[in-house]
Each structure stands twice: as structure tokens, then as C-alpha cells.
Length: 229
Image (cartoon, rainbow, N blue to C red; front, side):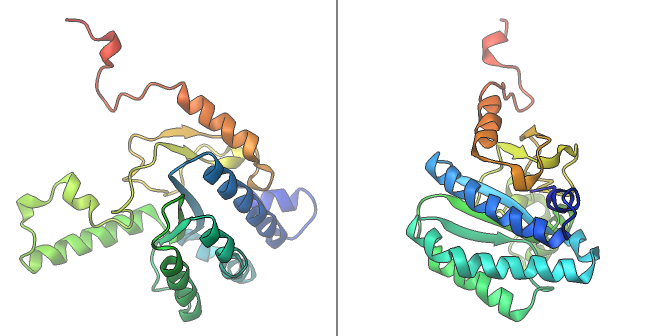
């Protein structure tokens, strides 16, 4: 969800107002994804690298997650949305961890859209934490070194209970993935709309989905339709 700060700067506004405007876009896209029958939607809300931003901006981003949970949790529950938060929690405040636990707990049995928030998340950090958990499992005798395959390693990732993403959309026109779902997006399709996140809307989301629907996904294999005997 890139471009909040630039959206604000271009209007002569504080970057924090751009993040607040971005939350409005979150609401629109989450509602629309549910209406479209999408099963999984992952939003990159706060990266490990975002701690390097000015303290006032970091505090604002933390408070926005608090506000989102307080203001929107009842609606998400009513709309059958299941919330999951991926990323490290050791650096988060106790009250924020408690709010995340509450949101996950209240929506655990919901069967509609799976809304996954990547918060205090980094792809490399996730891989290191997964490797540590796998090593600990080997040390406990629960897993042999030869038993560590791509499939078993994926079980140690934050996303163990979710499928890999089909489509990754990065707004604002930046052509990079910025440490997002590095393992999981190995075969994902990508879209890089130039729109800044606060201006991203349902129509542009649908446009990305329509473009995705025209692509041929081969996963390294030869499509059956063009394979020759």
C-alpha cells in the first residue's frame, strides 16, 4: 500500500494525514474484495524497515492500527471477515499485541474473506525466524535434516495456514517488492499501478484482477495447449 507520504506531500500536508487517508482506502478495498468473493487479501501495513522513519510517523502508524481495530472490528465480524496478523510481535507494545490477539480471536471462526495484515513484517526476517524454528524442531528430534523440504519449511513461515499469493499489487508506480512475501511470491503475478494508495479504488483493483485473468501461469512448466508430442 505505497504512496501515502507522497500523496500528502504533493498536497502540502503532513505525511501522517496521508496515512490516515490510506486507511480509508483500506476500508474500500477490503469491502470490495469481500463483495468480489476473494478468499485471501494480504495488506502490507508496516515493514520492519519502517522503524527507521521519524518517531512521530512511526507512532502514527501504530495508532492507526489501533484505530482500525477499534473502529472496524465489529463491521469485520459482521461481514464474516477473518483477521490474521503476520510479522514479528516482540517489538510491539503490550496493548497493541493484546488488540491484535483480540481481533484474531473474535474473527477466528469466520469463513469469509481472510484479511491478512503484514505488520512489523519483513520477508527476510520471516525466513530467518522460520529457519530458526526449523532448526529448533531438528534439535528436539521432531524433524530430521533430510526431512526439511520446501513443503515442510513452508510450515514454519508466518503464512503456514495460507496459500501463496496469486497476484501482488504494489501501488505508486515503484517497481520493486520491498521485502514482501519473498518465499511465497516466487510464482506470483505482479501489477504496478502508478496510482498512490490513497487514490486507489475498486475500479483500479478490478482492472488489476482483469489483467491478471488474461495471463498464462506456467510455474516453470510448458503449457499443455502448446506442448508438442
